[in-house]
Length: 620
Image (cartoon, rainbow, N blue to C red):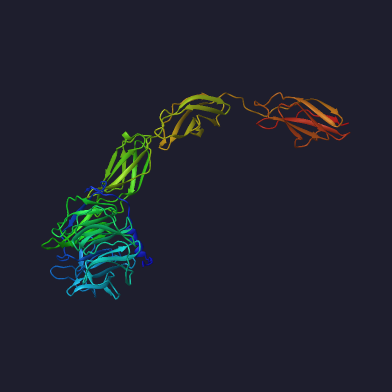
């Protein structure tokens, strides 16, 4: 049964390293599907100070716990028992305190649930083996558990979906096998299968495809010779994919490339000739890679994917005559840059920034290229920018006011990778000057009218500012307005008015000036006293009547305050009532037999004027 997922910070980091993004491939030829687009190529690793000796049928896998590739055993005329590690640039021979016996054809994978390399079986000096060993980065430990029958050339992969090691087939003392086994970190379990199975075989190629979450099995040596079919394992069932693909072969090296999210297969033997072809499985069909350089034809070589250096590493193999000892790197174009950000509000240009790709494809980055796409008028796009080491570049020659998306791609020695697009930007410059069309002077103020600028600079005007000189009084209004009032001016003085418009790119030039002289308004004073003309009494209702003051103080009156008291000159400090300037009579009520005295004061914006003449009346 599939084991439960084991939480561990190192396992989490491994998962993040193996995180995938859906990328396609180019530089390949195929009749099975659409042309891929990412450039890929083989690159020899030369001038190594030390390296494993020539060998084939060794076992190799990437150890994510130590960030190194581990190679064990192989055959050079006799079985070998050495342990080597590859750090991305150099080989180092290890000296573990314990080690599996010399062997060839052993099955080996990295078990992410236990953070250990697992090795099973193979062929030693005494024949087929069925012992299980684990490598912790320092030494080997034999796991004393029941196991599949002794065999060599079994296909084995770690299933990230179920967190189990899956083993299929191989050649045992009984012949070719087609059984499926699971290793849960402590024991092996034979699965009872009722669905169709891959035919018995050994030296098949098998790997977990993280893009489809299936284990992929290809080829092998069957009862009638080389096999050329593709099967997938979903954790419970084998499925024959029936996809056209590489010619039948066995002993091919195969890995999952997390940079491109594809399975890569190299070499193999068809029973007559060794192959130097590289094939790519994208989860649906196979395509053959047309690489400009490649390892020589061979089979029973070893290959693993280096998650730190983002490339596949291939070592050794057999060319039909000789064992080989060369090391090759399978590199691809870099992944897309990340966090691409474009800023505009600049005249006909946009500044673009980004972060380097998470994967350089296994080869140092040599530069970046940028291309602008005009979303407003397609034919105006295509502007470019390039840089070698910087992660910023200014794309010029854009059209102000058009909307753009800018795509950034990284390049390495293999080629240019997929691009990442920026946010939508609109380059612009500051707007032109508005035109003042009219000035309306008033008392202590002026109202300015204008028309909008002939050019907005490519982005809408946000606001307008009008300034009066001398003094610097101003008004600042939003773009929806085409007039504003400037208060705080001095009557009788002359002023010159100018204005500017502002948008997201900045403030435009100053407009042509316009002049005006404010009216010479007389100084404002308190109004003079109103004049009471008569009073009348009806019962206890007393009515007083008046006429306007001789002077309103130079400004329209606001109204009148009416004061009443019971003795002459003893009217209240606070008015009994206030009436508007349009009223000229007021009625109030008093106690019968009581005499009341009344006077008025006129009010304007300056304040309250002097008392009017006084009248007295007695309620009846």
